[in-house]
Length: 273
Ligand SMILES: [Zn+2]
Ligand SMILES: [Zn+2]
Image (cartoon, rainbow, N blue to C red; front, side, top):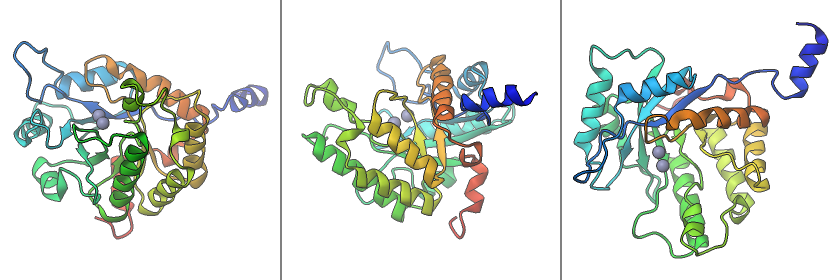
């Protein structure tokens, strides 16, 4: 390619293409459904969906938490499909999205991880019926859980959708609008710092292109050299399409492929299991 063309590509922020990968795809076939409720996709269906969207590396998960819709035996069945002889596991990995608790522990644990033969665990904060009444209470809770997970929980490979539940407070009318400016900057900076130190990836699960504090958070991730992961968080077949715009957004922000998380990175965590 001639220099002028390279320059044009470079100036559009597209000099080094990110490899489109999606590690947060729910095989939501494996959950307890109400009578008449539509069944979700299997592992094979979600793998096909991700491939159809052009993702190179694919990670299939389902929730691991205390919700009665997600008993452990559902995850065992999911794992059995993934590990079955007929399933093509090329560039396809198995994980769970486990809820983080106040002390940083997760609802899967090392034992659950071994039993399910997982490649990775995404640790996420989800709101339940005991959710904090105020958005400040929520922000403090999410920060505490992520910080403690980064400090103390070696089972976690990825922090899922940091502060991604704040929108709940806008939806329920507690605040007019959710935005990352509601999270103290020092919280976000500490998360980035600990993620670098502990070699845990931070997940891009949204494209908040109009939110300057969110963009600054991702610029901090880029500048600190933190690992990152991009997830569609698709619960239905076909919902994986959002990975394309998220990858473009990450590309536009200048995130580099060598910081783009892969399951093999767990082996280089310097003393970490
Ligand atoms: Zn989640
Ligand atoms: Zn999810």
